[in-house]
Image 1 (cartoon, one colour):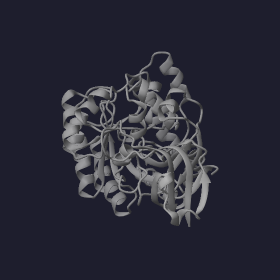
Image 2 (cartoon, rainbow, N blue to C red):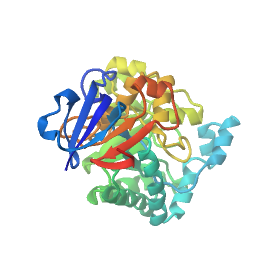
Image 3 (cartoon, one colour):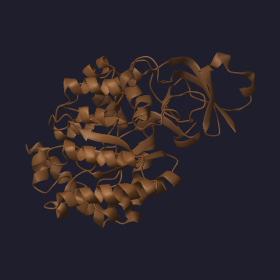
Image 4 (cartoon, rainbow, N blue to C red):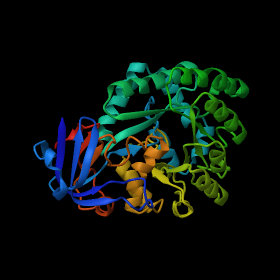
Length: 408
């Protein structure tokens, strides 16, 4: 079925062209899709006659953007960690809490206890609320199981979501999130579990597209990361990295060396790291909600953009350091904290986020041939949307040509 959205005040195409500030707007626009794919867009005065009789919807002069892409989340987990929120407010650092037995390892305990059905139900409770914010694609990491059974359980949950939910789901294996407590004195055994058992099985069963790792004093070293990601690449999993978040550690340089799709966090990135990301075309992912919740410095994105690095924006939704899936809020913070313009922020959560997930050929911008993923915003402009922040300006969200939220 061919459908037309007419009377669009401004349509932001967000193509992978020009600078990150170029969102390629079309005024007084129309958008045409057939089944799951966009087949035409442009000024409504130029709408081809053969679409004139198609089922039409009125955007009432509102703003249309590509469906938002949250390219860094930890969607499935057990429990919450509200007590740590209070501890940080009282002055304890993220690393101090982790060393005292809190942090990631406390979520691991709760996640291991949760059944597949419980985790699946929880994810299904989050996704419609994310859709209501204009989100049509969500990257989902494992990393709260940290044993073979539990890591595979998390990835199986994501696989079921991928097969049955209208939201685009991209899975990432993050078994190298932390060394679990039972391997504290047997670190080499855990590395062997990852490289000899888990990564091969994840790849064989096609449970993930990416292999991620947390490189930090409390997690994994650069040398360990090279080994783990090297094995992942041999098995067809593309590297991603949590790096330079809490301390400077040459993580961005490692991401460049490994040919990573993205390097995420980067609050303590070096000048050399910025240069290397630009040279290798690695996407930087800013996670301003994590800076907000952990009281850590925000990544200054200006030097990266000036060096030619693409900067994506995501929520880092997880129960500890970023317990919010509000991607528009993250976009606002990326302006005030990461020093992006509103246009740069929008592009960072659309086509640049798609590049971080290597799906830019199918989604992330409004172009013929791509998935019909878009959101209608009740705002006069992208600048006004983020400047006059409200709980939700999204009037409707469409993914693969199907209405997920609101009305047309």
